[in-house]
Length: 370
Image (cartoon, rainbow, N blue to C red):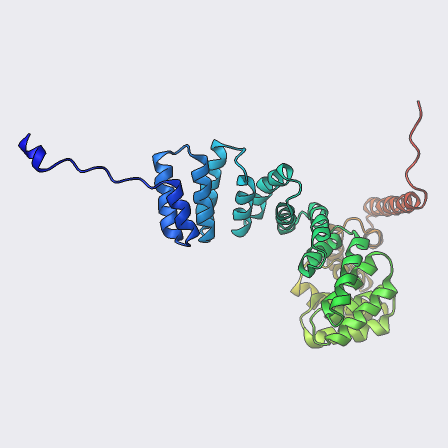
């Protein structure tokens, strides 16, 4: 009893309050603020608001892994906590986990359709996961909210280009080009969109402008040469493709298309050299294997021709010309049934192409009326 009077019991240390933690956060003392919020959440593990605030402080410190853990705990306790979905999505986005960011950002956008930040982050997360249809839809809304944002327009334009929405891509690239008239990239991308719309001669003009703006830019001369090759302007294409090889001697696509031109101009030896080098550098270029197969067949080197043409068909089964070449090879080898199968595939692919053109011209059939 005497000892108790002489040495009174020490009062327990006072636990921090949310007000104190918020004050430290506002003062920029983030380490101390985080300690306070942790202490509060340890005292009450079911305090969703405190867990969420801890996540905010950790995110400010760029500790995004820890922040997402705190946000998820808060979300499991109170899914309707204001701002929690957006904060979680932002933290996932910041740590490069775009797929994980999509769920909470979709929820945030649904809860607050007017949130430009949620919509923008959602579009960028879709872009980061190569879901370009969804990215284009979301980013289109974001561009309307921030029309002067060039980087945002570039993301939208690329998304549209990837899903073959060429009119959308062209609108964006032309807007960018007006503000960056000397940008080789803008001219090239505008050219891609124009080519996608079937306006290849205009696309060539854009690639020529890109080549003039940046003659040493890798890919510019190949793009120009490819479009010229596509229009069968082989002499011009050769000049452009050789210009590409002067910048990048190991460009497999440039080598393949130069090889194709050489074959078409009856220079088989030069074609073989170019095509073989092309497939050594990159083994998924269909045109290179198709041409190799044709040259080997002319040389009656049927085993090599078969390997090359089968590879070409595997790379793109929808191309009728490769099936036709393979059918001719089977004929030459005396395999009539295999040849007939390939020719049947050629007829089927041509019929599908004709039906697609007819549908585009006439539109879908009218619905049946009961």
